[in-house]
Image (cartoon, rainbow over all chains, first blue to last red; front, side):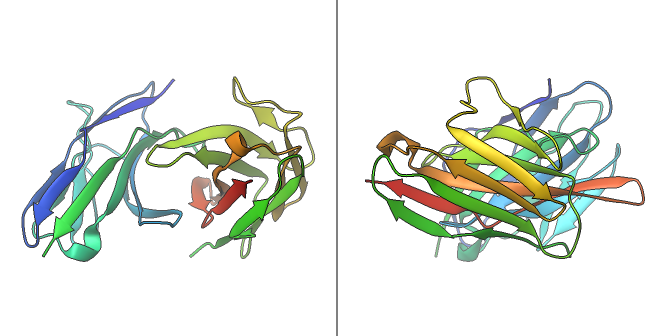
Length: 111
Length: 117
């Protein structure tokens, strides 16, 4: 089945620093790729997605590009804010089957 | 956008009692919903797939008699934790799958925090 590997956290940054959270996946076929964010005490929110190779998903200053050749979907943001502190989950998904999540990466941004 | 609600948002119960959690898709129909649980500082683990009008499909290691799932309508799935014990304390999250013009997407509820005393 599909699986995902995310960089180990926690990631601790100062405000306005550059963020990269690595994500690589294994999947049969041609999955869509998602990043979800979970703020403390809350459920999951879709952050961004990409459905085909070389697509770039973007939202709230975050970006990720679907790299089929390296099976990666790394999340980046040029300047993080304290309000970005959360847990980030990368997930491949095939045609609406249940999303399977990796361990998540905790981001902590200090002012 | 598509909205999924869960009720209650949190519940505290005594050991041995049963607790029902509702998951509703508010502005779309969902023949398929998914139930996850999340322990503190851990990832979401898929428990089961809930299919409207048929039996749920449980993941390996999830007790179907312990976690009863009923998907009675196209907008409602319920998860009942029967004879709850402290080790069932967790954050339960549902998602509903919307299919529109051949595109399938999942939308997550806000979660229900269950504490069993």
